[in-house]
Image (cartoon, rainbow, N blue to C red; front, side, top):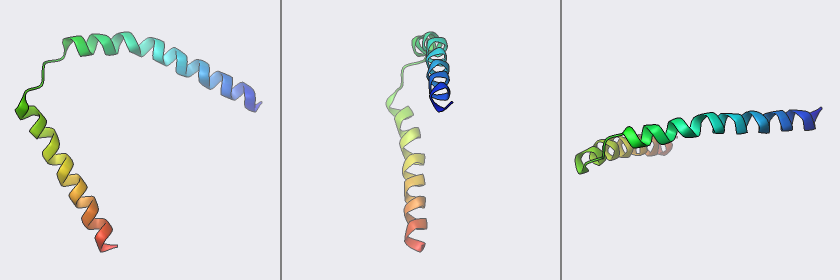
Length: 60
């Protein structure tokens, strides 16, 4: 029974990839180009989260 579960999981994963890849290509083609200011909007919260986790680890 364990082998059938692995086969079914692999088939489901393959079907999901087949369904999602065309939509991902379409989303990438329709997305706007990032500017330097956009990257700062990603980096600042990411650094804040990393610093917060580092502080929590230092407390423990």
